[in-house]
Image 1: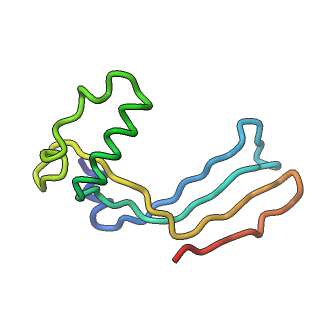
Image 2: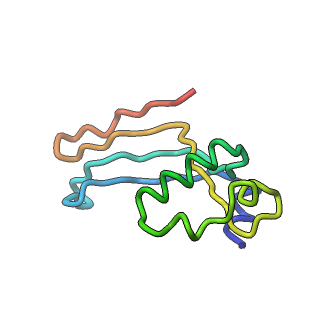
Amino acid sequence: TYSIEALMRDGRAAMAIYAHDSTYKSKTGLQLQGHVQRVLDSSVMSDGVGRYAAAFEGAREKFDSVEVLVSPDAESTLYRFVPTSYKFIDGKTDRTDLEFRIG
């Protein structure tokens, strides 16, 4: 609960995705900055639940109805990461300067 409350006050977030064989000296991957927002739109929520359920067998039964998930007092719901910038990292070629702003 504390983490969600903190995200609602300041939704800034970052993530990094690196190749499995990356090392500290030779990273290859993607860094993203953005913000997290609660999914409140029923059609977006329905799509999110559908995608999650398709990826994880048996997950659909664990979700409340879409109407409950988008309600302000939902005990459990979905959030999404909205990127504002991304940076390609390719330590194998020393290319670490490819940064792009979105929007």
